[in-house]
Image 1 (cartoon, rainbow, N blue to C red):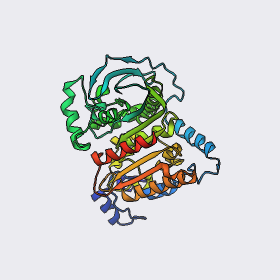
Image 2 (tube, one colour):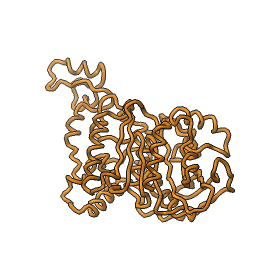
Image 3 (cartoon, rainbow, N blue to C red):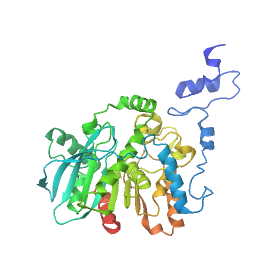
Image 4 (cartoon, helix red, strand yellow):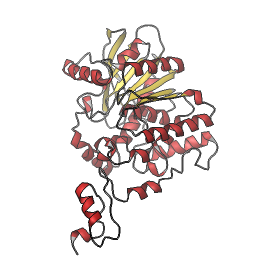
Length: 385
């Protein structure tokens, strides 16, 4: 028997290989070409995903009970300790007054495994202040993390890189600095692989993920747990009004923003820019997710057997949530965004809280968080936090 005829040899089909298989004589089922790294039977796998734990599909009709069950399912699949009570033991640098706020570095233990350094901005004036947990993107750029959103003031070696990133995605603004000027305490920390915890090389991401899986953890689970702990740390600072803490992020940071809102009661509201979609509609030929690599930072193995992506975000209902999408954003299909927005709207409507959900597509923009989008987010935050 030739290797091409052995069972299982058609598990992945792309390009010329797919065409050859489709034309092969004696084949009981012609394989059709697919783009990316999908198995030829991927439609059947999609059909198997029914998201039985989703609100409205789950037999549970008490929303509070549903939230507890759905959150518990997500927590189980984070592959990290659910109750990590490691003392934060924060170490603060001396404050530097600049740009309408006091800038500090803070080093703390988000888990028992590692100390993490972040940027902490405090507005001038008398607190306690509202606060924002600011979550950086992926961008396949690892030399900077927190510096993508907060202008570095203590490390000139990263300033040029940070400015170039702000010019590319944020109309030259540093989002954290803008928020601090508006009266918010801002905390922004490096995720594993970025800034002080990197730099990770693009092609190393899959190896990092597989090694963490072997060790009983995952990149996405570790990130989720750290963001959860960061939210609790921020809400507990004396300078912060713990009832008025929001999460804000762009791209992967947008994913992190709605995720931490779903997993943490310390988050009162969340704004997610350029990261929301239905899972099935995202897993289509040509989508960036099919390349792996960056996908591992937003992948909880097994979760799709229970909940769709917007179902997880819905755990945060009925708190105020904002989701912006760029109509020219090639990372998310129009169908995926539509499906996600419909699911989100249905959940908030079921709670009598549709006015707390802000869904908007900006048809003229791509994968950016430009000044026009920022200004709307800031105004929204001022109204809900």
